[in-house]
Amino acid sequence: MALTLRTVNLATLIVGSFFYGLYCVLFFISLYLLFLRQSIHNSSQPTPSHRIQKRAPAIFRSFLFTTAILLFVTVTCHWIIIVYRAFLAFGSEGDAEAFYYNNKHITFLLLDILLTVVTVIGDLPILYRLWIVWSKSKLVVVLPICSMLLLTAGGAVSTNVIKESNGVFSDPWLTANTVCTLITNLYCTVLIAWRVWRTTRMSVSSDNKLRKFLTIVVESAAIYAIWVIFFVVLYEVKSNLQSFAIETGPTVIGIVNALILTRVGLSWTSEPDRLSSTQLIFAALSQGNHGHSV
Picture 1 (cartoon, rainbow, N blue to C red):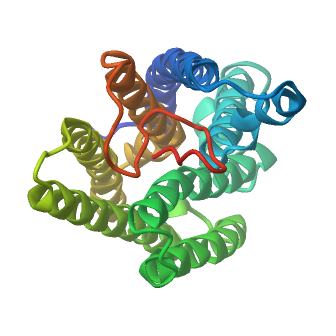
Picture 2: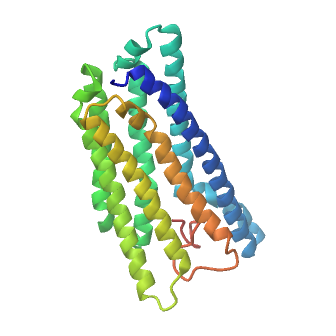
């Protein structure tokens, strides 16, 4: 018996809300750890009184902090629309099945737009980490940047195609966009892993924090890759369950990013007196002259 869209979207509401709650917990824990790291970093380095005002807001100027906030806002908006659509489907609209099949409804189009925005924002942190780990090499980030630009353009085209079509399964751009984000994440993860592995291999005194960071990045990328492949398979076999996979995707992206920040932060706080001998300062969002967060 084929799953109805009403059943799938009800499951999406329940599981998606659970995922969002988990994301919120991880997000606020990661923020706490980031502020804790910044506070300890500031207190450990005496600063002249005339520079205190300049250093205090350093964390707010951090790229990773900014992307984390933007990701939280967009994922929250996406979840709110899912909840709102459930009220419309099972309340005022009357026929839930017909409502969820209506891909021209404004809320459906908003979900599609937010999916693209969340995916792009979610890819930015790993692209940034790649850039930092490879000593800010512009050449190494050309491919993922092109992939992200294709994803952005493809997302806009996809929304227009869905709006004019009779169903989501007639949109070839959706699969292409998924492949783009998968390429970005796999490419960045592999190059980060290779660089870190090479650094630890060549180092006389191998830095355990580098190994921990490598494990965290690879495991998080694996979670995201599995979810993306899960969606692609469901979409290609034209299963209504693809709706569940794609609509919970933004919260999965949020969880993966928050999980990296949280695990790296916990790793740092477990060894507060040990400074890394590398240029990578984990769980820190202090930029400027003191280092970069990865």
